[in-house]
Structure formats: structure tokens, C-alpha cells
Length: 183
Length: 178
Image 1 (tube, chains in turn green, blue):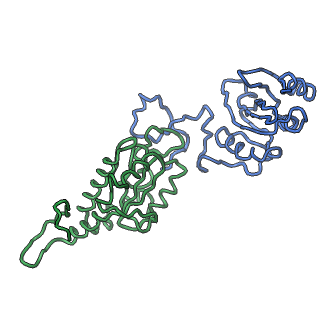
Image 2 (image 1 turned 90 degrees about the horizontal axis):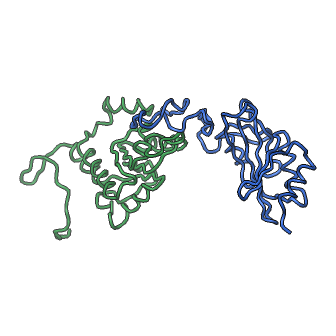
Image 3 (image 1 turned 30 degrees about the vertical axis):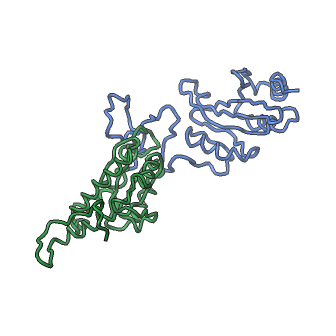
């Protein structure tokens, strides 16, 4: 392991430390592991996708946050990033992609269009992806800068860290999915 | 010798009489109106006549004129192009607002297929004899024809806008997913 002072390690969760042992909650350990290896599924339909390409590339480097591997199969992805205008004709496809993701799964709506329809208040455009799938984090901007997308991913990491391992079995979560007719 | 608009007009008038009317040079394009029942015959003549040679169908689109009399509330606009003389023309067929039907042009130009589907999709104009007249760009479940003036452009499902400031009134009929 390098001794360079530039390397910043993730802080250990709260726990009890003694000689040769460290005790903490399973939730915290699992949350830590999940939060720092979120595999993104980029669903890029327009200009926000271009900003995400910059976010992935060397200058902004989303890999620093554990999202090195873009997953282009929904089945091996944790974090669905919806970037761009979603036409109503695209909505069932987006919904199918979300349904194909395995638990745990999170969604970030990047940009004004994915969050609310943006300037496209029109008959053909879905007025925010939260009309068809649940969303965890909304990133504002038209399009947002890569820093803002990273901020969104970091906000999601905070959610993931503090989430109970069993949250997905909770009545609230089941009720949320049922309200979207997703079983 | 380039193809003169007077030649086009004389040939059409000789052949079709009062089925072809309203000849006018609008800016740089020669335009006229065709009786909707004769559309296919006129287009075939424009395409196959040895002088006219309008070999290319550039575009088909629809227009809604809700303030016109009932028989002229919808129009189909055809643009044609003669590649040999590089001359373009445009003609309109006016249709009844309650029963907008016109013959298909797919028997003359295969490229008319998608253009007619688009015109059906947005204006609800029925092209008789079209091989597959269904929506092409909008979602299949849509019940409105969005380019008709009675349907609002905005989506009524929008929640973050205050209607008073954006001139929005009613929902776009049954157009919301959830």
C-alpha cells in the first residue's frame, strides 16, 4: 500500500475499537461497501449525457467515488442515472430498465428535463421521471456541470450509507413501489 | 430551356379544368389548390408528364384552419420537385373538418408512406389506401392529434408551474401516463 499522503481513505463507521478488534453494526459496514462502489447505469438521452461523459472522463473522474465501472446491463447496476429529456414514448422503456435492475437500486434524475420536464412542457414529453419510477436524488441544472453531477452522486452515497440493509423490505418501501405499480 | 410556371399552369388547366385553382407565385415557389378527390390524378400527371417531370415528392404535411368553413378546415400540403429543371411546386388539398379523408400517394411515391403516417399522427388526416396508417412518432396510446388547434400544446400533468402565469387551461385529453 502506498504511503503517499494524497490518498484519502474512507472513514471507518462508528464503532467500538480495542486491541485486535473493531465492532460495529452490520448495516454500517454494508452501507459503507455499497456507497463506495455504486455501479452506474447511464441512461443518457440528450445534453446532460454529454456532461456525464465529462464527469466520467479523466478531468472530473467519477471513478474517484467508486463508480469506475459503467454498467450497460441493468442487472449488474446499482445506480440508474437518467440524463436528458424522456419522451412519453420512452417512458415504458425507462420503466422496464428500472424493473430489470436488482435490489438494492437507486435512481438519480440528472438535469431539469429528467426532474420535471424542463422547458419541454408539451404533449410529447414526460413531465419528470418520477411520474413512472421512484427517484432518490434530483440534480438541478440545464445541463448541470460535472461538479453538480458529482455532488448528486455524493448525496446519494450519504443516503446509501445511512440506509438500513433491510429497508427494501420495509412497508414504506413496498408501498412506494406499489404506488408506481412495480412489484 | 427552364420550365416556366405558365407552362405548368396551362398544362394543369387544360387537363383538369376547375379541379385545379388558385394559382399563385408565393415568394419563390409556385402554389395552387387541388380538389381533394383529384389529388392522386393530379400528382400522377405532375410526375409522369414528359414536360413537367416532377419526379420527387419532397414533403407532405397537414394544416388545421379551425376558423374556415367546414369543408376547408384541414389541408394537406404537398411539395414536389423537378430535379431535371430544378423547379419546385406546392399544392394544397382542403378537407372536411369532420371527415378529413384523401387518397394516399403511396401508389406513386413509396416515400409518402412515413410522411402520411406523420400527417395522420399529428393532424388526424385519413389517407385512404395507405398500407399501414398508424402513429409513427407519438406514443400509440395517445388519443389527441396534437397539431389540431383544439388540443393544448402543454402537458396538464405539469406540477411545478403556476397555471396563471403560463396561460394553461385544460388537460391535454387523457394524455398523462399516471
